[in-house]
Amino acid sequence: MRIVCLSAEAADICYRLAVWDQVIAVSAFCSKRLPERPIVSGFSTANLPKILKTSPDLVITFSDVQAGIAEKLIRAGCQVLALNHRSLQGIADAIEMIARLAGVPDRGKRLARSFLDELEGLRYEPPVRPRVYFEEWDEPLVSGIEWTSEIIQIAGGENVFAAAGNNRASERIVSSAEVIFKDPEIILASWCGKTVNLPSILARDGWLPIRAIQDQHVYAIDSNNILQAGPSVVDGLRQIRKIVQDWCAQKEKGPAVSNGSIQSI
Image (cartoon, rainbow, N blue to C red; front, side, top):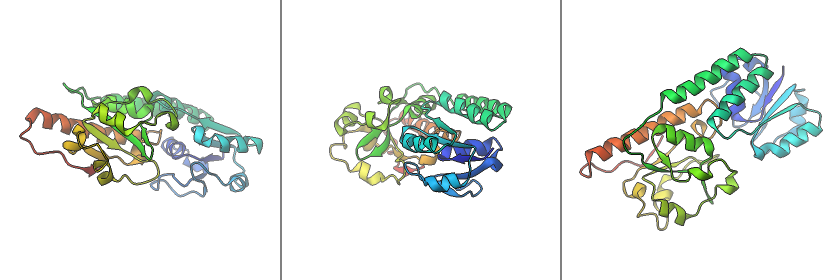
């Protein structure tokens, strides 16, 4: 099997399934921690001639953003697996699907089970859940996708825009006024494709009354650990769980304790 992974999550899954020798090309967003492979795409763009030149048996895409790429590849005669999962269970299902296609179904079942068990093992149930605003993009403001809501819930928080979590980015746009009204106690930012500017969040017009801004509970999460719909979201969960635990500890100590810190994690 000659596999081309046009998304970072597919590459990560293939590596963890120990079928990296079958991966012949990847996206530019593939983790630098993985053994090097030729780059044939970005995320919303791809070099079709370069992909076809690799003679792939399977090309794996992810999300509606890559739907156009998938269509062109199909018309060019390629076998395409177009993943579009939005939940943590969806990640587990994607792991098993890729494993079956790569010829290692048992490994897929073990990895999927291990992934779900690890998530459950990190579940935190605090006496009081902080209100959390997760920001996936800043211009316009885009709240987090479904799996980020699930992760926040497991970590002990309550996503203030959880109801919008399973839609496209265009359907998760929120207004500044809505964020102010929700008054989150923790703000988590992870901007896909660019570095989070924490000072700019603190300085937004009208945001000073927000509890998270007042207490400086504003954090940047590496997008590799939260916005890639693969096993690496466990790392994001650990980070968010620690943030929630610290918030809870501070709340227990009362107002005499100094404010939290603005930090990038």
